[in-house]
Image 1 (cartoon, rainbow, N blue to C red):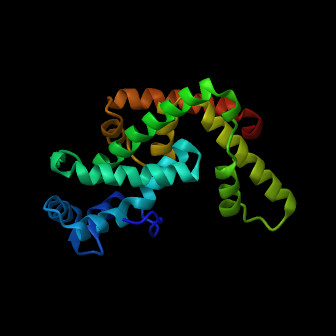
Image 2: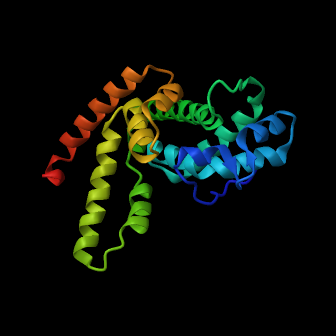
Length: 211
């Protein structure tokens, strides 16, 4: 399994159950459970970029996101026998990825606590977002866009890991409350309350730019 990011994936949930319009995810999972690596590779290509994007927005670091995405697929492959089809495959996969990332973030905070000098912000995500999103032809608008991206990244980083994760899954990845609840292993009510609180916090952090 390579580390490169696959082709873009539609966020339309109805498309998540088919690959190339023919072979559905269920049959691919069943084949992968028998040890069919090509079937799992197909699943990996299908969901890799979308999972990477979620982890990227949780960690704010491209290298960490790539490593955690790969680790998520490795763990998913090793745990396929435990997948009972009670939820969709991508919900199950996301749960693995989110839990690995939350664990990683917790360990990173501990390392930063004991080594303050290493707690500097990495500007990788801001630079990547600038390269992707700043399409203005005027230098003034580019500067404003870049500043807004930096402030948004800064605001997201101020949220707790669990609140930031829910914002990423809901606002960026477009998942519903029910799916997020399954991924985060909590109730839909908890998802709604955390999302509401997170939005209030973001609005407060970005009030200067939203007014």
